[in-house]
Length: 498
Image (cartoon, rainbow, N blue to C red; front, side):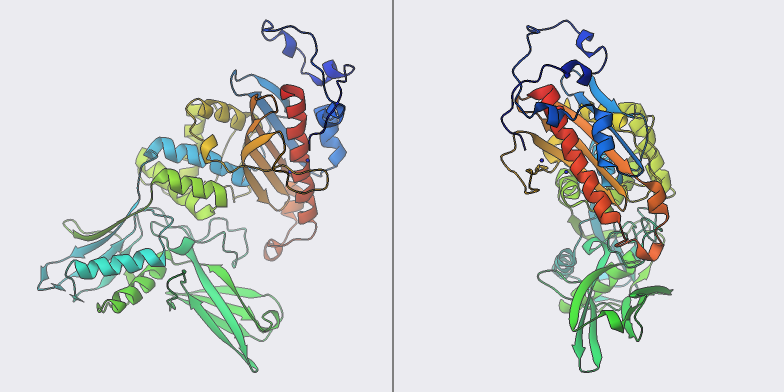
C-alpha cells in the first residue's frame, strides 16, 4: 500500500491481461485502435492478477475485485466470491448502515433526568444520567452538563445518583480474543466517555512509583476511583486485569515501567466511569452527589433537566472512518439496529441484523459480520460483495466524501501526493489480516470501486492472546500485504484508466 512513470505502449500481452469476454460486453463507443501506453505499463499491469499476487508470496489467501463505478461492470477479480475477515474495512458498511437507517443529521442524546419533585433547588428524588448511545461524549461534555444542571436551578440532590446505560446491550470487550489492556477493545454500552479509555500515568519516585488513573482531556484531568492501578514486582505479564466488583482493578509489572510514561487503558464499566467523572464535575459546581450506581431503567414521568446532543451522525461517521474508532462503529451500528428492529439482544445479534440488511440492500449474500467494527476475526466479507455495495452507494454519493484519502507511495516507499491515481478508501489491519476497500480515480478520470482482502488465519490462530499486541512476524506480513494493495491499484489504473 508505488509511482507512475512515462511508458510506451506494449501491444503484446494486452489481450491476455483482459478478462475473457470483456471486450464483447458492450458495443464499442470509440475506435478499437489501441491507445499509446507508457513504457512501464507491463510492470504496472503485473502480467496477470494471479501472477502478481503470487509474486508477493503472502501466506494465507488474497482475494480482490474491481468494477467500473459508472456501469457497475466487474472488470477483474481473484477469488472475488471468497469471504475473508475484512478488519476495519467493515466500518465502511457500518457507515452506510447507520446513515441510511438514522439519517446524516441524526444526533445522539445524553440526558440528566429528575426522578422526583424539585423544590427550591432541591431534588427530592434521584438524579439519573441517561446515555443515548453517543460514542464521542467526553469529560468536557460532562463538565458542561454539570454547569447546565446548576443553571437549571439544582443545588442539592436528596436521592441517589444513578446511571442508565441500557439503551444498548452491554459488551465487556468488543473482541474477547484481544489482550485485556488494549485500548481499542473496550467495553460498550449505552453510555461512553473518552472512547471508554482511562489514562494511566506513572512516574518513578525513588524506589517507588506515583501512579494516576484519570479521565483527562485538554481542559480537565479528573482522577477516577472506578479504575485502580497497583505496581507489582515482576517482569511479565506487563498488565493484569481483574473484575473487582465496582472497580476495574489493574496491576502493572514494575520491570516494564522505567522512569515514567503513560498509556490509555480500556474501561470495562462505562456507566460507572461516566458517573465517577460527572460526580467530580458536579462537585465543582457546588452540587454534592453520592457515589454513582447503575439502574436498569428510567422511571416513567422523569423530568429532563439537561440535554446534551452529539454532533450530527455524518460528522461522527466521517471521524470513525478517518481514525478507525472501534467503539464508535459498535455504538452507531447497534443504535441503527435498535432503530430498525428494536434493541438488539447482543452485539453479535446487531451485527447479524446489519448483515441481513446488507444482503437485502446491496445483495451482499456472502457477508456475515460478528460486530460492526471488524475487530472480530470471525467476520467474513467477500470483495465482490463490498464492490457491489460501493458501486450502488456511489449513485447518491453516500460514502466516498467520507472516506479518507489514501496516498500512494513512490518506488522508494515515500508518500507521493502527486501520484496520478487518486484513492479514497478504508483500510483494515489486524495481525495477519489486511484489507483495503473504496474508490480510485485512474489517470484518465475513470472511477473504479475495489476491494482487497488478505488473511492468514492459521498464522493468526497460532498467536497467544497475551502476544496479540505485537506478535512476531505479523508486522512484516502486513507490510507486504499493503505493498501488494498498491501494486493492484496501479495495475487497475494501468489497465482501465491510462
